[in-house]
Length: 317
Image (cartoon, helix red, strand yellow):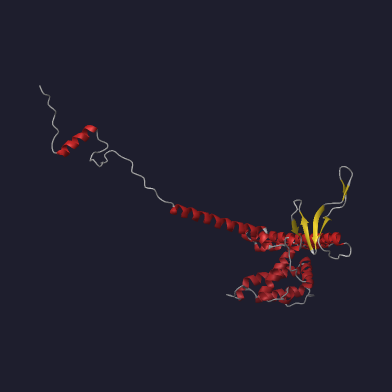
């Protein structure tokens, strides 16, 4: 019933908002600008100094008098005088027109609406992309939080009902606690139905154990889990999509930085191993012979080092 009333209210509100025409929006703008310029509560009639029942002749006379007072030539250097003079002409045109005056008189008697439609505000304020994204983020997060709240209340009612049913099955109609543990079966919902063989099944049944005031859920493995109101997950802003995305991004950022720091520290602390230089041509050895030289050159160098030239061996005759 509440949902129906809420939908009906929204339908009426949409109908009223969509009823505002372009001329109505023009009147809204003039009323806002006139009060900002001439003072709060200033109306078209009070600005022209005529009653709301003034005739067309009185309005024309008041307009000519006011236009002389506000003419820019008679008010040189006055800030905003051109806007006020132009506004006076638009207001006089509305009051001189039968349909325009009828529209203004409606808002004059009933008041200008506070909410003038999304199109009205969008056309005047033109929100940027950032504003739209921020609005959508807040809106969707708020709706998600509302859904969480509704789900929490529903789960809470189910838990409390399951606890009552388990105690009723264990203690009887008098609901007097009994000593010891009592195993019971509780129907978690769903009416009785028939299986393929035609047997009646009394809905979804769950094994529970009642021990004094405590109620436990019994697993097929024999483990018992306490069932209380804390089993229902309450609504939390931290579990809305935007906050979860923000927290996840921050954790990934710090986790990657931490891994990078650990890798850098491990590289700095790793021991260095000295490797012998690769032998190259022309490198001197301990014996003074270059490894790149031929053996004949090496023996010649040894002879020179020994103190003279190497003599040729002579053959005896």
